[in-house]
Image 1 (tube, rainbow, N blue to C red):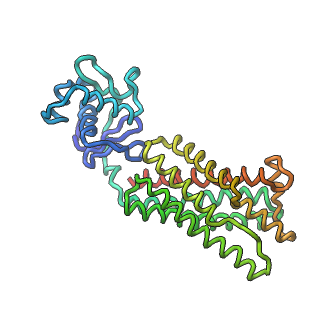
Image 2 (cartoon, rainbow, N blue to C red):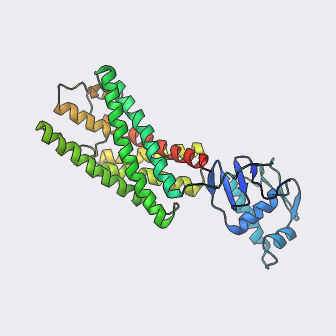
Length: 340
């Protein structure tokens, strides 16, 4: 090919030689140095047989190793690329001789896609906040349309309320994950308690302001609203979803599906344990202030509930968790891709 230092593209992957990185749809695929060299050797000779001797000479630099080392290397590369020996899309075995790279390959001219101007910590903090904003807007729109009789003003109020709460929550969770990322790296399981801690802090603060602040203004204590218990669940769900994405090298669709399931599981279990998310908090406020335009029974009817009962609390909690986690994971994917 032309410039041997230019990134090469094949399928949904980009191989960047200058930074010694492999990307899948904008996300880095963790690859050992020796295995990167083996993939680079194959990709730079598309369609040509790369013999076992050449692997030993150019990848292992003459270090004596068994054929099993090369076999394990190719097996790992196929797993990371989503390839199969029986029907290869990327690496074809030439029995008793070596391997051949069979994918269509092209150079990616211009500025390297992989040189990110932002640290992983900054990315996760910013993307998590933006994803939370999107989730908050969707949640506010849903409850505004189905849970209020206040017309356009009521819908706008719930959208603003939901978006504000979501942004505050996302910023806190993103900050918690970012601090751990600075300390331990973005692919460390400690990011999960970091996200949970951020959720606990903002949940506790929000609960205190909402419940006790409302009591000081109206003389009515609304009861248990969304707090640190629920914040911990959301923070854990978001951080766990991002860790699964990074460690499993998932595609965009698989990452969003995974985040949806994780988010729904965390918030659903929390609701079963007595947690109250936005839907439950709105129902509580409706009960305390009968003259309000909230009509959460209409939301409950969507789930076959009379009023807004336990079934409604459970399913709306699952929906909130799934939307929150998947929106943040999607925002992280887009942010990382565009910053490359």
